[in-house]
Amino acid sequence: MKTSIVQMDMKFADPKANFLHAEELIRKAAEEQPDVIVLPETWNTGFFPVENLAELCDQEGKETKDRIGNLAKELHTNIVAGSVSNVKDGKVYNSAFIFDRTGSCVGEYDKIHVFTPMQEDAYYQKGDHLCTFELDGHKCGIIICYDIRFPELARALALKDIEILFICAQWPAVRSFHWQLLTAARAVENQLFVAACNSCGTAGKTIYGGRSVILDPWGETIKQGGTQEEIFTGEIDFSKLQEIRSSINVFRDRRPDLYKKF
Image (cartoon, rainbow, N blue to C red; front, top):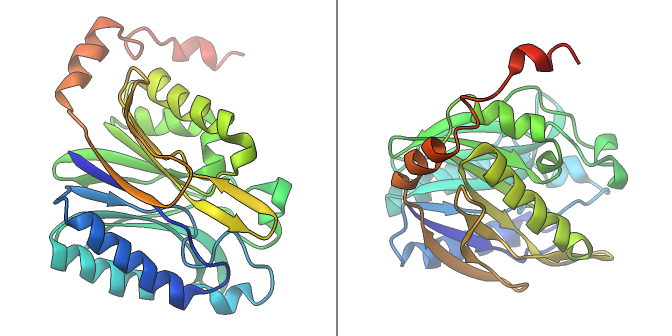
């Protein structure tokens, strides 16, 4: 699966400009003819404007579905459209949308673990469901930024037999070591591929760190970005999964009967 990561530098609180820029970057990424294109977290608003947040949000994901879904169909490529600030049922969510090559929305996910240190919980609702979906016959899952610090979530998705975990984020540069450590840990412990798309640039006083990455199930880097806006592409070879999972079969050797007792 040829995977293109769009490490986007977005304009804070300017969804009109960000939709145009996202479309421009998606078209540029499509020149490599990838199977899937991946965007970062809350790329429509940045993370995150407090003033007039609801007014800046997408509404029920409509603009994302119309514009990015139509792009997926036009370009005949799968798009993991990161997440957007989104009003749903009158409440604000951090919502991810995934589109297949026909432009159909095949997955929707609301961020479960909102980032309390920056008071995301005061402005965004918490999601209440996991999300798995298929792209070109491969089962996938998605999590958003702070979710990566909760290994239970990634393991729950792994137990649903996903082969690749997509992560969209706005992860700050000051904690880049954690980003690199946690993305690798989620790949290794769950024996799956990870495609992690982070943002870059500055919002308020926060500098976002880039270093988006595609990892194999050994935690080894297939392709990694730098700290500035860029698009890069890596090849995911799913045939490696069987070899890795048979050589060290952690899923066979799990003891869930005991875990429940602790």
